[in-house]
Length: 178
Image (cartoon, rainbow, N blue to C red; front, side, top):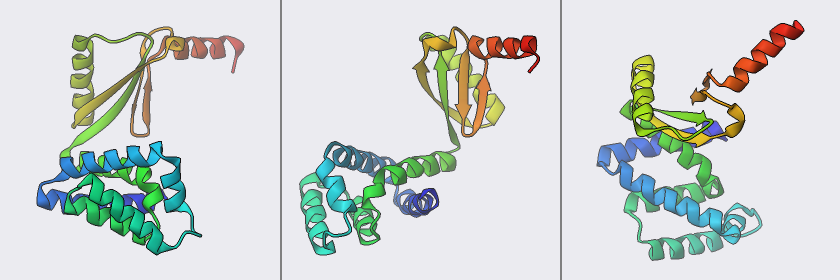
């Protein structure tokens, strides 16, 4: 599904970039995803192969009329429905955000720390990661007290683990001869 989602995301990114409406369409699709996730019935309707396409189309059109989305968003949702991918909107949205970030030279970094990090320390980390990656960095912070101290940073598939927990595990492995 990831490859399929990436294709839809790339095609949509081409359209919205050309029209200058990337942020607006991204926001509308995120709101749409939240609506579908919060209503189990909608997910069932759009993912159930026994429900006729015409019924799904009527439901989608009614929701679009209420939501008053941009024509680009409307067309994209209809394409997803036609290709039986509307129930996979969450994955498509995730890939869409990644494609837009890649094109804008932005990389996301997930940072886990033992305690909350000050704004100054966050900015220092952003600057250091930008220098390492050569890109603008968007940071997302979480806390996990089990780290004891330090931080774990994930950029794409690369993980930088500077946590005290990890250092203790390495010392333990050396002592036990593993």
